[in-house]
Image 1 (tube, helix red, strand yellow):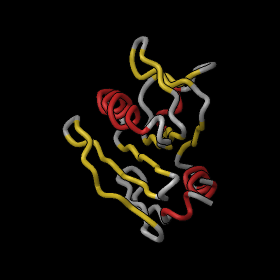
Image 2 (tube, helix red, strand yellow):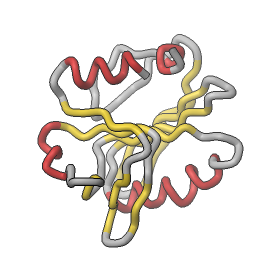
Image 3 (cartoon, helix red, strand yellow):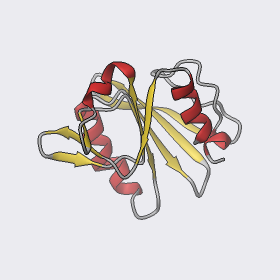
Length: 135
């Protein structure tokens, strides 16, 4: 994840945040994404103790106990709030699923493993492979 943070922040694109930090997607609906990105133009969403509004990219690390919640409730909440890109990381299997928002619905771009370069619409040219996420 260090390479990911270094890419976003090193290029001056925005900031990478990590849990625990509340993100208020809408009035009264608060989540704590594992990792998320706010681009510079959205840094005004940073409040004293939380983020007000949708991040530009959310990464959830799915454990066996949270995978269902991440794929249903959180995925629906992020889509409804307009998060353009959502990654679901499965650490046991070293798999990353990349989803892009299309007309209010997430479309999977596939499951990525090993030395697959992670595709990103919000971070075009991202040179990071799946294995590098786990370093």
